[in-house]
Figure 1: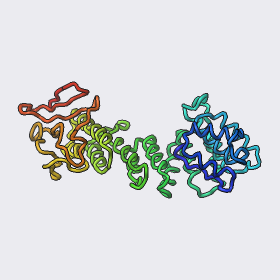
Figure 2: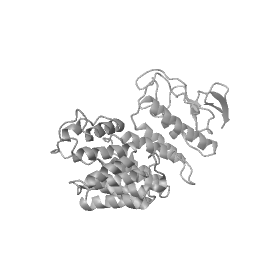
Figure 3: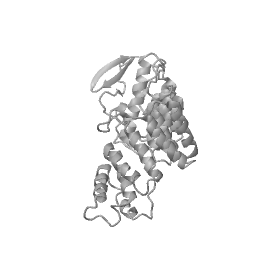
Figure 4: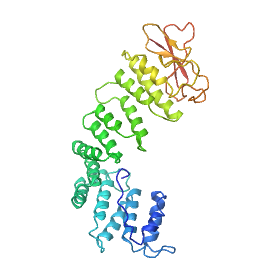
Length: 355
């Protein structure tokens, strides 16, 4: 539901100003406030209790909190009122049916859901508002929930092609491409089109990085996937914790690939270890390495080891080069005499991996 647009409030309605004051409340608080307003409790402004806008807002809040029975009752009251022909009542009926698919909805098992009902409501809205993208986006979500991935992909792609402000369509297109046949390149391509001006840009690119590192079906993670993930991460502006966590995921994928006998190359590992800005004297843009970094075994190993801590400077997280996340491998600087061994720490337990 959060990925769908919210119908506008009629600004000439007596409750329009009152509803605007509730925009900062969470769904639970909003439901309580609107329920009190509908009951006409003390302090409710004149005209708000009888307003259609108040009941429409209450229906949406009830759906958001999972109280589908009460939402159905509210919608039934609206359908029997003087504004029964308002298309927004049909829209919220569709949302109500779509929300019944969600397992967390109290008292609603998955087999209760009727996809045809949700589709019929959104089709009716689309017929009332031909050319509008919101009903098509809703039809895409309905088709996806019903398992009809090709139809959902068509709706999502149409919406995303016409209007790049509906970012949920890009995420929906990526999901359906994955579910419809493990089309990882197509899913990543959809997320790559999210514009940098969008508030969801970073989320889309982080998702794309993780898609590069996720095995789909029978396909394996290739060195190209690891390099693409590292390059994409290098172009993002992230806080230190998220950057280090994603960097550790890339290095873990590279370690798995090397363990399986697949050559990764120095590019991916160097890119994964490279900070967004140089933060110590001697950083080499040409090699992507810090002073003191060297191969653990010349001409054979594709791994580079580096200092655990770097000198403080612009772009550094207190000089910490690798996070201490349990279960994530951390590369330590090779000591003299290590020879053909690569030091790896797994959750504080030292092990040695022969290259």
